Image (cartoon, rainbow, N blue to C red; front, side):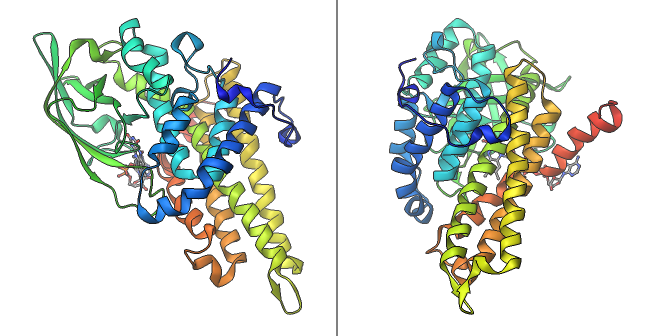
Length: 398
Ligand SMILES: Cc1cc2nc3c(=O)[nH]c(=O)nc-3n(C[C@H](O)[C@H](O)[C@H](O)COP(=O)(O)OP(=O)(O)OC[C@H]3O[C@@H](n4cnc5c(N)ncnc54)[C@H](O)[C@@H]3O)c2cc1C
């Protein structure tokens, strides 16, 4: 593999301590992404957050490294990462800039659907240009103003006209939409049966407009926007997979993607932990360091213990996927645990900063805002618990 992702010679960074075999390739990719994050993402992250500015140059650079379609096979001009290397990449990006990490996850979610289900023509027109970094990031459009958790309730619809499809409706909360050129969109194609189909819509198509860029609490540079389709005509050739199978494609891609959100949560929490530990060691109170006080030592011990739990569940999910298992419940457990642990770790680390933690001058304040949505997107914590409960209570697992 001759992409820059594969070039840098990495060295062990302690991932082995989790007991999962990490290959030299996977370690190298993690190191490369950490270096990219440290050198290219972290320096501008605070300014982009403050200015509500999309990381156009940074995403472009990452896209040319294969970052927007990391699991796309070399035949599709992608780096062909396995699930473990993909998750490690997202963790590393999130340590540096969680907004870049979520734009990357959304693009990969959309492109994973094309990797699995697109025909040769769609690979040539959409997947390969994104994998080569020629078309920036892609977006994934399922959620609507009235349908998030209850995704089957979407109202956007597509009807046939001649050989084309005509789309009408609205999408909301679409990550990376501000800059995406390729959108994987879900729409009802048979109002009678509630069947959903999957389409690719290109930026600039007549009848397709971006709405407002959301003014969010955190992840402020991830370019989240509404999409509007007003009798938007797309070629029949833009239907992905079979008509009526879109919901299966969406759910099939979302389950493994939850491991990437677990990885993003871990990346945020790792950065928060490092900041909290440094601050507590430096800051003097009552003649000693904040970290000398037992209550704070225990806060750090609890945070480290919980973070390792999150890593273990995330790596287990990725490993099972790499070994060919279906991982719906394991992915939900990883996402549920990592996102909730992320919230607790960031909160504890902010507390160690005292009043400074409440100031925009300190990175922990941004991480606190960025962390909150981990428990909401790609399925809320309540939905993850429903998925797990269906398996352990109704399905006889456990
Ligand atoms: C920053 C951000 C980025 C996003 N990016 C994307 C994207 O790129 N593409 C995309 O398609 N979507 C995206 N989303 C949408 C996201 O996935 C949804 O917001 C999420 O699934 C929740 O849906 P909702 O907001 O409609 O909440 P609702 O579904 O209205 O939920 C409201 C509350 O009810 C609870 N609830 C709902 N159903 C149940 C149940 N059965 N049992 C118990 N409690 C329940 C929920 O947990 C929640 O607490 C994004 C959202 C955000 C905030």
